[in-house]
Length: 452
Ligand SMILES: Cc1cc2nc3c(=O)[nH]c(=O)nc-3n(C[C@H](O)[C@H](O)[C@H](O)COP(=O)(O)OP(=O)(O)OC[C@H]3O[C@@H](n4cnc5c(N)ncnc54)[C@H](O)[C@@H]3O)c2cc1C
Image (cartoon, rainbow, N blue to C red; front, side):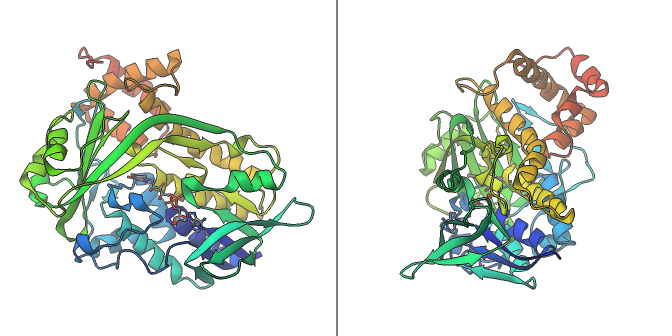
């Protein structure tokens, strides 16, 4: 323990996981969050989902959220025994490949046990569970109901020394800190704050997809899923829309339908069901037709596109300040990466502090490869979909996407290929693992080609 006080701006997944890491390095950690610290899901897995309150600051909480194996590893590392505890609390659990039905470009990938756990949950439940663990740690304080107004720098403007926060109707106050972490999500004002202090703003990279998630809660008989805890149908080139059924606590499920470039599911019952019938494979629609909806209609979340702020490219940055989570990079949610990447970033920050360093530029450089891979997966995948403008469209990416289409076809029957692909999408192996000769032989040796 070398430092006194850290302030974490934003109390969502990135903020909570970071706060947990910082308790190992700071005597006190204060989390500042606009929402009430007690608002949201009560933590009772049997409560009626219609009574759950999704926090205002995290509207995506109504929609399907999956945790990749890499993310569950982080959570296990920070909260040992988490998987068992979540299972005991009623979260559906299984194997990350054996019990998760994943379909890509119209192919259902072969399911075999990968030997790695998967847990399914509602997003508010997971967040509340983590929050209860973090809030109980010694040295952690929470300032709920406070808006973050800005950051405070020293006279030379070389070091951030605190954050200005304000509760409704109250005067603003400054929390002084050795480290301020911005985990306020994709609406982060850090680029503006930097400019106000005389620093360059990070360059922004975007890939527009005009995605919408349209979700509805259901009561689902788990037997309908044949032992699976989740079904994910990714978009195919022929039909760039998808869907997911995620079993949750209390015998419920959230069913999300998603489409890009304005091809969004209607919210009313008939339109929603008709849209589901036009997904590349029937599994999601079959569950919808056999299950009881727990809401009259569906709710929508629009996601314009993935956005990455290139903090790693800056040459000057004030000490005592870092940015992470969606505030640094927000990924197309279809790839289920945001929470896992935020967790890995929090661990990276911890290992930097372990070495006695608080240099933000070094943090951004060390985190760059952590972000590069999911960014490449998400933008490379999106760029392959018809009509998506921009993104990596070079010959290399086109060849990779062509190769991937053959790989999906192979993975339908070949468990070695399916397992290799699953390890990549779960952020356990880099995408280059799919090009290794052992896998390439199995992919390219097949005569059957993908339609695309
Ligand atoms: C529809 C959808 C589905 C998704 N599905 C998945 C999935 O399956 N798997 C996955 O891993 N990820 C998924 N994600 C991404 C995931 O939700 C985020 O990556 C994750 O929540 C981490 O984000 P964060 O904590 O950085 O920011 P956020 O979750 O956006 O949280 C930011 C927090 O900061 C607070 N805040 C913001 N501004 C202020 C301010 N000025 N003052 C005070 N407080 C403030 C907010 O209230 C909020 O609590 C999905 C996202 C969306 C939109």
